[in-house]
Image (cartoon, rainbow, N blue to C red; front, side, top):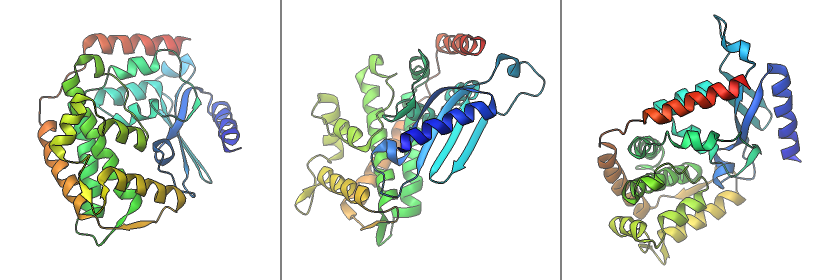
Length: 280
């Protein structure tokens, strides 16, 4: 029922704004699999306008927003999407990798966008996000907002994944990121050689908190979050707090490496793709 409502709203957005939506998907907690019973729907989309809209002296708005009850729509023009990807906006890549898709993307969009991934730049993004949440909401607090705790741990696991990509070779470096908390956890705690090296370095896969490993604690938190509301809290967990601090130190050192430039061929391919889509 909700999906049908979202589809109808997307059609209305196309009609009222004279746009063509190329891709629409869920973002945030529902895409990550950590939604609560009262979570909103965060729908993100990429669109293009008729060709003539790009030729005038005063181009049309490159963002569209609509808030309707628990439905939060935000869309970006295709050119703005790639402009932000070029600047290193990781959020765009997460949109394109969402497991909940309302309007499937045009051919090549994911592939062209994936070439804009730069592992050390992405590490900086997730490192900064983790540090901000940790310092503002978790450090030295008696209780943790469960939503913020899961967000911080998810970002930290994404940082580990990007660090592993730097070791796995170029064949893996343009893979769009996993989105759901569970899938990231499965990858980071994987038994494959490279990921196991990271797990052993960070001492997380078998570290115990009472009778539970960190992975088991996180799985328990997921269950609590899905069955509860947005304002659920959990007691401060010193072992996980220590692990976040340890991860932050490692991520900081990885993020300091030289920023990888986007290949000219990737930029040229993106330009040709944008032109082809706008010209129809």
